[in-house]
Length: 233
Image (tube, rainbow, N blue to C red; front, side):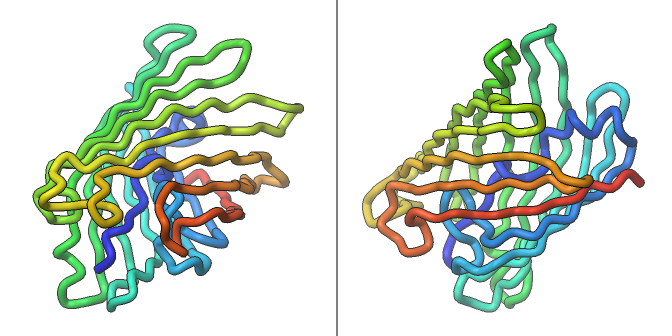
């Protein structure tokens, strides 16, 4: 299996917008590509994704998320599970932390890539928009027993009512180069992304331009369109 994976930066783990809406919610998403930090998980093809989430009054949440994938083998499904907590520390700062488990299905050896990951996300709200400082860590990345981290800084600001831009930069880094590398002997790579976000008649729409420092045809510059709808249950 090609060890390319979407992480929590795209998973619906920051559910603050859903807390006030419903205890249970479900989201369906259609995307022109499923990318993990700029790397396609579907060989540059479209993806159909869905999640179901439970939120509690104290900020605790749990859920499951799934998507089709294509790693060039028999693996055709990613199915993830997560539990965490969202806390408003004060009027400006928020904290989101938890643990996720990623699982793969479709082939006899697909589950060899299953792995856990913990995450911590800090949010800062100001008159200039929403700033994020996000961190992820796995001690068994894709079943390789390699330590792996992702660090991200992002900022979202409103350009007009109902229209926003989100700019982000993240670094994926292997802590055990003898067990896992991204590109030859490179233990890390960079990912750049700029996304336009809006909503129309209950649908959330995002158009994102992204690129990475990897020299792969599945990680070069691209435009990704996604349309999603969240339902209260």
